Image 1: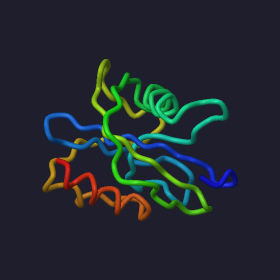
Image 2 (image 1 turned 30 degrees about the vertical axis):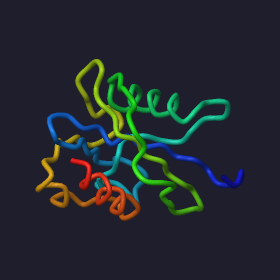
Image 3 (image 1 turned 135 degrees about the horizontal axis):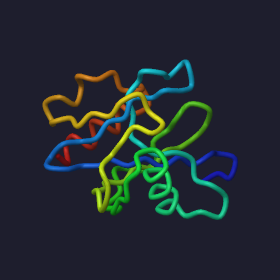
Image 4 (image 1 turned 90 degrees about the vertical axis):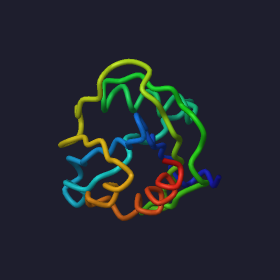
Length: 129
């Protein structure tokens, strides 16, 4: 990957056939939109380490990282997101940095207003549920 592009990781957390969606609190232009939990990979951190750290910070849970969903998903600003399926190993998700969390059945996936960049990823995850 081009070193000028910032790498973002996301977790498609699935439990009992349902997907966990998180409602953004910030920045103002994305507030209220729904997304996959995750965030930027810090220097010296592996993608999996970043994903585990972000889920602990944002949701207060420990995850088990599974298979990757698709390839590199483009984000605004030249960033790229990589998404993995994940399962909760310990804890109960709590919206520490989000407005709300919601477990979505496959038929409910499009009942929330996903951030536009996440919509193709939702479609890819839907095929796996």
